[in-house]
Length: 432
Ligand code: 2PG
Ligand code: MG
Image 1 (cartoon, rainbow, N blue to C red):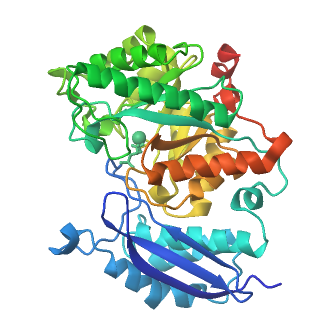
Image 2 (image 1 turned 135 degrees about the horizontal axis):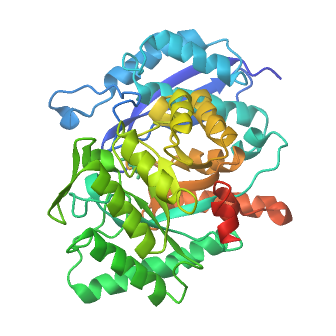
């Protein structure tokens, strides 16, 4: 049966922040079809693919009518007739058609929605769930989930400087069990927050958005919440932080507003290293700004043998930047967000590059999400080992966790939970 692309359409839909975004739908000659919605970040790296937004007064300038029109006028005519199974050629065609280095002309939002919709259509044509189509017979593991308990930074009115306070359960035994343990911690954290006084709300990804006196206060409460949940901090449940330091400064210095501190890169590294010694922290993302590789390297040199050091804004899911970061020794794990680079093939290339260096890899959602659950399939089918989605509330987050539960069930006795094996060598052994 032919997998020839017969039509490509796009429409404006709405994301979890109530902002417009692009949905693409690809149909093949056979009738098989695929659909995908572009997510959107709030804490973005300067080297990311650029979303095309309308600007102006309507929808706060976030409208995507130009991105949608570009799909009809340029992308659809270029892709119709192509083989949906040839993702590499489809993605090359999209990049060439756009013609810019950062997808600014047709928009990263239009391109990522179409690229993912083509992938879905190819899987539908093969009559396989996406994760199985991607695995293509290779053994894969269910991802270790990284789940937000407190949200801060750009996702919560900057109530804390650190963006994500998350937990990981590498020894849970199964994906399902990891979620159950996380739920215990999330509820225990909510109880503790209520005892402290009024909650300030819920952050963009669904984590509690509390009033903390300092970033360390948040770490203390999270450690207490893990213990109050009946699980052991640093044995069953570990803390994982996304510092998102790009939002706090650069090589010239970082501002921790909540702590009333201005830190040099060296002091910032020392602060992170100290936290990792004092709290049960297993993973730290973006401890420095996107181009401050010296501070990243300091953190990595001091604790990279026992703590996962993830590059997000630093790498922007770009295989060349992964290679440079590996040569410079600044991280041992890569966050993989398809929309950060713009196409499925380029994201896979970044993941492959990271894995070739023995790094951990985490497929990740954005702070602006939707009901689209593709990342549950990508993390499993690509055998990424880890999945970052946000918190343990809100359906745009829970949809992804629930989809992995379905995949786990479909695998039956073949299901393997990545657990500690998801980390770079050395860290994995320490946890064993
Ligand atoms: C990140 C993501 C998800 P955003 O920094 O890792 O938490 O945030 O999508 O806003 O870039
Ligand atoms: Mg990040």
